[in-house]
Image 1 (cartoon, rainbow, N blue to C red):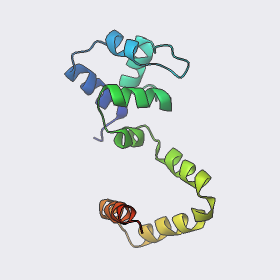
Image 2: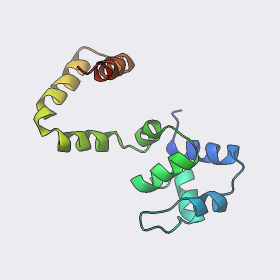
Image 3: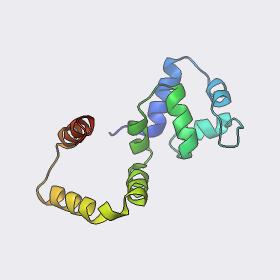
Image 4: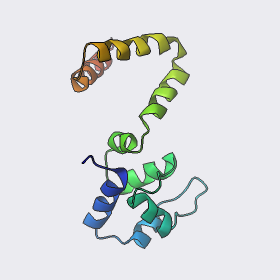
Amino acid sequence: MSQQLGDVINQARRARRWSLRQLAAQVHKEDGTSISPQYLNDIELNRRIPAPYVLRELTQLLELDEDHMLMLAGGGEAVVREYFETHPEQKEAVVQLFRNAKRRRFEDWGRLNRIVESESREGK
């Protein structure tokens, strides 16, 4: 069975021996108020997906990988949308990349990511 967002948050909280109330008091919404223990419980039981700001706070407090947590929350689409908003001229090329990857059954995204990171560091 695949890992779910709430399970990861629950395990990380328990590993720190924090109660729902203790963690909820440390997590703030955009308006600065703390989330409720009930809301956190719903997240941990996979009944609710936290707002992006709350997810970021949880990720930082629990020292979890932000990209992994975003993907578990179904945020991959949001990342792509954000990229398209800042690079609208690349939409066609990105769509073509994914179509080609699917057609050729490409699966080594880690290698592709390393190539992009390497070229970014080299200033290409």
